[in-house]
Length: 112
Length: 113
Image (cartoon, rainbow over all chains, first blue to last red; front, side, top):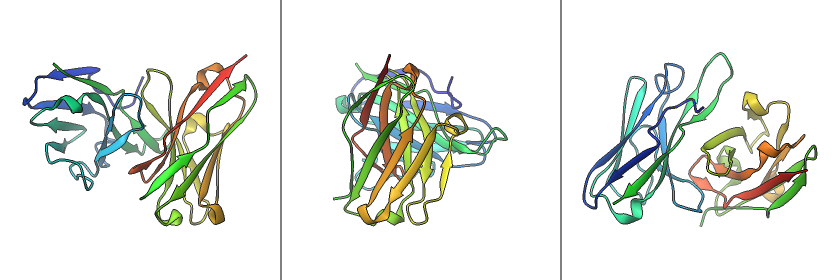
C-alpha cells in the first residue's frame, strides 16, 4: 500500500492529452513539492518533473505538472507511442512515523 | 556525461547480507544527495535512504532503519548500500540516484533459501 495514491492505469490515443493524478496528505504533498518519474520497460526511472511543475533539461514541454492542496497531476499532451511507460509521483513526507521520501503506486500508461 | 554505474547482480541466501556499490562520474560527487531506491518485481518504487556524500550524514526510511547501512568513499566517488538479514521479500532491483536526476542502471538482488 503506497502512501501516495495513483490510478493503476491510464490510456489514450496518439495526439490526445492524458492526465495522471496523485493523491496524498498534509504531511507530504500538502507541505512539500512533488516530483514525477517516467520508467520505460526494463529501464531505470527518469526524472520528468520536479518541484511540482519544473522540467529538467531535455524533457519535452508536452509534459507538465501541477499541484493543488494535497493532490498533484501530470499531464501529457500530444501523446506519442514512446510515452508508453510507468509513471510515478513522489514527495517528501514529514509524518510523525518518520520523515522519508514516499512514492505513488505507479500508473501504467498505454498508448492505444 | 554525468552517470552512476552500479555493481553487478547478486544472488544471496536468506539471512545473509548484500553490499551494492554506485560509482559516480561526470559530476562533483559531493554536490548531490545520493539516494537508494528499490523496486520488487512488478511493484512500485520504494525509498530506502540517502547519504550526503560531503560529510557522510545519512537518513534511512523507518522500514529499513535496523537493516540498512549507506556509506561512501569520497576518494572513489562511490557510495555503498548494505542490507542485512536478507529475506525473500528483499528480492528486487536496487537503484542509486543522485538528487533523483541521475540514476544508476540498477542492481538485481535475488534472495533465496
